[in-house]
Image 1 (tube, rainbow, N blue to C red):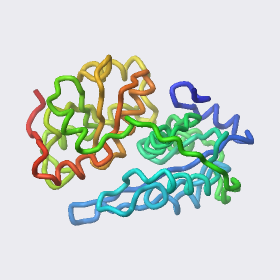
Image 2 (image 1 turned 90 degrees about the horizontal axis):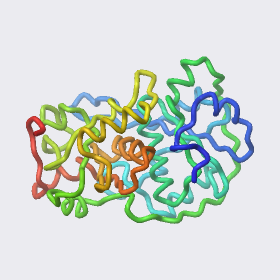
Image 3 (image 1 turned 60 degrees about the horizontal axis):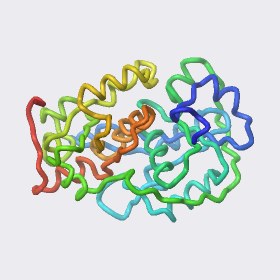
Length: 289
């Protein structure tokens, strides 16, 4: 059981616990910006963190250290050995408590939170509102380098928290699994693209992650979130697979469901980057029925 109920901590809590000896705080920011050719440029948030961050916070780099860079898809789950080395070098180890945050939507923080969960680590939380809330409240910031000593992290992989393409193929049309797209309605209905082919995974439903947070980037209250998931048929006893463009925003969907107590939830790591590149995978466009 995590030290933070439902995987969230508030800024007030964090401000009062920054000096806890077992607490580790990490900025996980990645920036995605248009590249001028219809794609996006991916930039680690490390330079942004170096200029200004929550006092004492370290940086976890999803672009390189926490992703499998051997394939063509970005941000794929690394091996257990790679993950152990990267987080251990940053000072996250067995016996730590961890708070994760990022700039903008909390999807980068939830990505690391979900990865930690998949590797058997539960004492992690996401800062509600992230960097935006911390700054808006006028809380202290620093440019000092983090001083966490290297630690030993032991990965204990759990099955079922990530889904591959074959598992999603089997889930399509099985009459039981709810496949949830966390991208915009324009992408879901095919008016915009998130991969080589436009549209959504056949039979999937849509709840954009932008509709899971308020203007301060804080997660909506449990009652509102539960109602939105129930409206699209997610939750209850049904297994859920979440997806997006590249397995990042989908972790916010999964995080929200886990926070509400839903247990059978998996993130499709390859998401539309992989699915839409395969002409044999079924896709749909147009308004959702």
